[in-house]
Length: 211
Picture 1 (tube, rainbow, N blue to C red):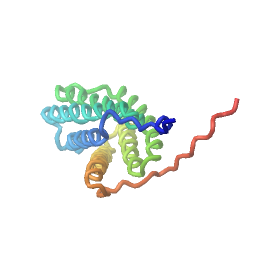
Picture 2: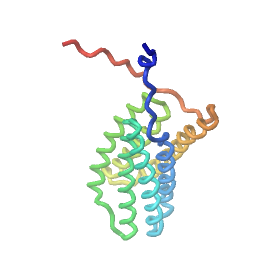
Picture 3: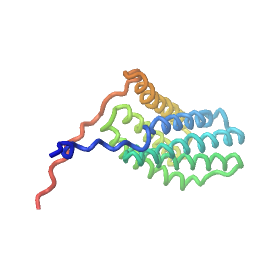
Picture 4: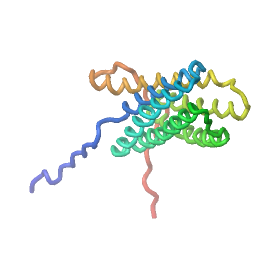
């Protein structure tokens, strides 16, 4: 009997190359576009329109493509994060475009959605802690960004504007580091950009319950 009939099947090739760097670079560019506005340095209609296009093309476009390719590659967690965040960047584009015309989004609706996003990202932060400490920090930074936005609205203040800007800058920097780690480390065949290991240890799945 031909022993090849009992050989394990080779793993199926993924349809796409690793898409995470595309989403991370798009995220970093989107954060860079928002930073002058978050710092209060660029509050003119042309600044809003310019940032809006970067949010649309890079924040939304790159992350949507990355999310779709991640899901096609059977990466549920990464695909869910990138795709969800992509639509949030499309909302940034819409909001900034409206602000350029003097039309502000409704603050109460944004507050309610921000609260929902905070719950979502807190849970995702825990999930990504099983992959890398740096990914945990990456998601924790997003948590803080939304928390500061919520506090600004709830307290009727702008006291958290600087922390929001700091979170935006840190988010872009961590996104760049993670993207470079995947791209450069793979090309160099060695670790150039260090990414620490998991924060949490996943427990092995137990046997199915007996019937």
